[in-house]
Length: 413
Image (cartoon, rainbow, N blue to C red):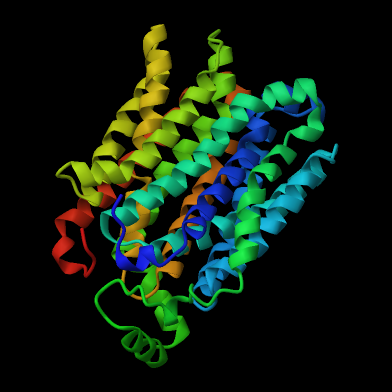
């Protein structure tokens, strides 16, 4: 993979470390969903509670977005990632020690603050050291690392719990974070990774001096409002709402969904691996095929809509297995493209990405709880799938409008 000059100046360890941290975050996020029966029995709760325990950290991820965007625009990213990864590791260990559901929710909320900071600062860091199609590919790898962690949780957590006990459930994710923590500690004092207003990695051909002048000229509040209300950021947020809500909801209940249908086997692992391949492959699709980031987002939204709408009425075993995989692939492929179009908005990639991530997580924290509650009442997942189909339809409408009026927005396609 060819790198630009700026990327080549960044040590390989620093380019890889955010991906390692994301794998660890993904593992801890999905560990409980990998053993739903154990979770329900241990805390004596229903499926809505399983959705809630998935949603609890997403609230914190939302709350930490604007502070994370603010900090990444003003401070080097590596020390921020070191602190966030350290808090992530410590709070994950505490999760294995609690036996009270209320305490679990509190700790998941604390952990979510660190996880959200890792995702935002990591994505912003990558957007500064990569450009063009390489940037899309790297954002896809970053998102794929998160789902890879979830796939690892689905694959090894049930066996670990049987062999070692529940103390191994979340703590295994901590082990995955240690290499990244070490890299962040070593490079934390380096001056080679400046904040946005001192960055040499300018997005639109303007020098750092011009950026500093513009930032001095505009008030902080005006700058914030200009970025978060930019049409591209709004549409990217809608696309991320559909993508993340679909991914989180399907991943949370995929094990229970297949078990309810009498289908057994590591299909949950296959679903998360499909999401991993999808996120990691999005940039390659953009590079190899004559399709833009916006077109990829739109096409995949249509496929996801069809897939989720068909799930409630599917009865044949091949379709029951195939449709969730097609749907999760469709919502995963445009991950890097969503981040790319948001980060390319002139002004502040940290704030733009924070806005997209926060909006997506607001929706994602609601959908698992709502889907679990509907499952408790109806005994089926059909209503939840239809909601996901509606969200992907909205995403398609937004990206279509953006493409239609693309000439009015100063951001690359």
